[in-house]
Image (tube, rainbow, N blue to C red):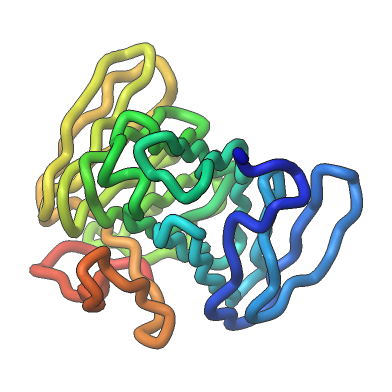
Length: 224
């Protein structure tokens, strides 16, 4: 059976700080480690808070502080990845995501929507930071505030950024920026790229059982 409103689609495997969920029935709850996550939940972290979600297809998401994510749709009938689909929506803030069984078997069915672009995956580990006049405290190489829009880094595999302005493939080690829904996604240099980091104890597992370090960088600006 596909996941329905009362089916558990993920659990909170690590939590530092405060995480809340707005459920589809309108009820809200504070979550803890091992709490269940359901389809249509809206998850929100507070300041200085990190939450790691482990989905039932082994995909993972780490939410960073002051972030909100909606589990728009999650289908995993009889744990058959080839029949599954995932649709997540980043409302605000930043995250890191690692592909699970569904994304490896049917990559076109694993998508993440942001306010400025949709991310399609190709078996990967990537980070997103969406700025909307709320990134002024983040340090940059230039000393200037981060531009409003979506900042992207890819650690493994590749993603496709798509909006009404066009499409851009971003491979491992590359960075990109999307200003708004109408402007084509643009690749940026490693010197200008923004890498979204997370605490070492919340680094998500890779699909191969090890933990690649998203905090490793080669001169680009990192978001602590």
